[in-house]
Length: 187
Ligand code: A4P
Ligand code: MG
Image (cartoon, rainbow, N blue to C red; front, side, top):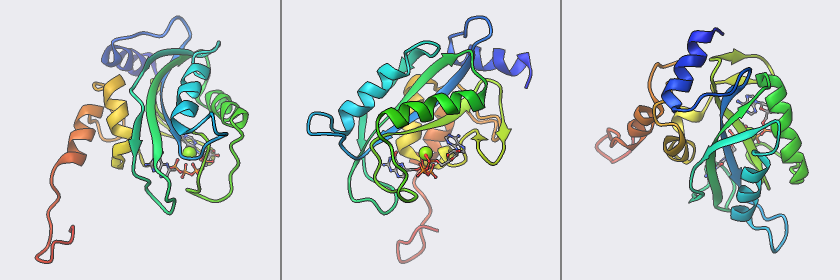
C-alpha cells in the first residue's frame, strides 16, 4: 500500500508517524481478572501502558468503558481503543500485540471465551491485509459498538478502506434504529 494511503490516514487522524512509522488502531478488551488487584479495568489500563513501550508509541487512548458481552460469556467486558505508532509491519505488530497478551497470561480456551486480555488490530495506515493469520481492517469491527465507540473517540475521521466510510459514520450507522417486523423482531 502506497504513501498516499498513509498520508490520508495521518491527515484523518491529525497525527503523523515519525519517519518509517506505521499507524495502527488497536482494540483492547478484558473480561477476566488476572488477580484480585487486577480486575479487567486495571488490565486494560496496564495494556495501554504496554502499548507505549518502545518501539510502540501510544498517540491517543479512549476512555475505558464497561460493555455487555457479545457471545457466550456472562462476564461484562472492559473495552478501549488506542492509536499506536510503530516502525513495524502489520505481521510484526501482531507479534508484538500477542507478546503483550502473553504477558497478561492470555490463554486461548475456546473462541469468544473469557479472556484476561484481547488485543485486536482494527485499522492500519497502509490499508488492507488479507492472509490466514491477519485480516485488516478487522473483519468484524464495523458491527461492534464496543469497538466503534472507543475508536470514534481516538480516530473519528479515519476512513475504512473497504467501505470508504469514516469511523464516525460507521459508529452512527450502528445507532440508527433498525427496521422491525410486526412482532418487533429485527429484520
Ligand atoms: N487475526 C486475524 N486478523 C486479526 C486482527 N485484525 N487482529 C487472527 C488480531 N488478530 C487477528 O484471535 C484469533 C486469531 O485471529 C489470531 O491468532 C490472529 O492470527 P484470538 O484473539 O486468538 O481469538 P479470539 O479473540 O477468541 O477470536 P476472535 O474471533 O478474534 O474474537 P473477537 O472478534 O476478538 O471477539 N464482547 C464485548 N462486550 N467486548 C469484547 O471485547 N470480544 C470478543 C472476542 C467477544 N465478545 C466481546 C468482546
Ligand atoms: Mg481477538
